[in-house]
Length: 350
Ligand SMILES: [Fe+2]
Ligand SMILES: [Fe+2]
Image 1 (tube, helix red, strand yellow):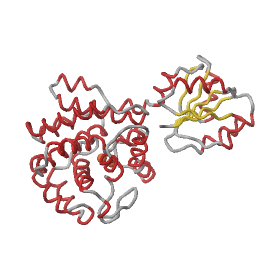
Image 2 (tube, rainbow, N blue to C red):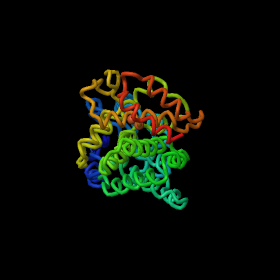
Image 3 (cartoon, rainbow, N blue to C red):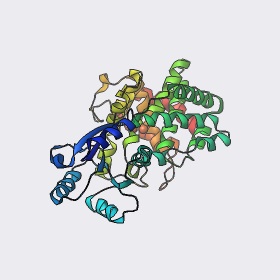
Image 4 (tube, protein in one colour):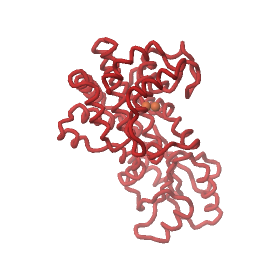
């Protein structure tokens, strides 16, 4: 579960917040006077009287060492411009009214996440039933990173719906539908889901395995729910620092799946290793061929191909054949026997 540092001079307030956020965030109480000894977490809430100048300097210094993309939310008196100004001068990323309302706080913490998804009902009214189900499945998967339980029935229903849609209407119609999604991240996950389902069909796998590939497509980037949206949805190439943050998503995903959610080990394997390459040049562990399962190899191909053919705001989508050529040119990084078997899928997508 995600931890939240609660900086305060009141253990009573800390207890109250702990009760309100039970099951969502693990509240870790830090006394303002002892702040220098504490380790900053990704989320911090400061609710303390800021009168003492030496404490203020300590707090300011401490906040500088918070994780990149971390949020520091100050509780301020409603309508107090002075407190708000002071909070932002100290490095607050946002403020909430004091006394803290847990719902308002959660909205501030997860505001990044909220802009990612969308309204599945819009897809539904347009007749894109499987895409709407897949979006619901993605919402549920991404909410695991908020400490909420995974709604496995939604994911199972969505996987089956996507397999059915791909097999009845074909991959190109799926690509056309999901390329319209306003979020690059959702578009990507929906593309990978469809491509993986089509790959399973092309390989002649049993229905249970085709459904598993479809689920895996939805699950694979779950850790992206913890990457700042400014990086996820950046309309341009990422710089080195942003890329370093982005590359943490497999580990974030595995961490999120550990928090009491009952997920099949195959799915955890995919979340952890879909950016590993057979020649050991991938991340996060630099695994080599014998350590990478067939299921992961399939997902890596679906993932690379989908990322290449995505619609981006700053460039036209790459033609399917060109994306396939790039997979071929990747040589020993990806399983070239599987890449050959993938060829009919890319033709169906064109
Ligand atoms: Fe990924
Ligand atoms: Fe991906």
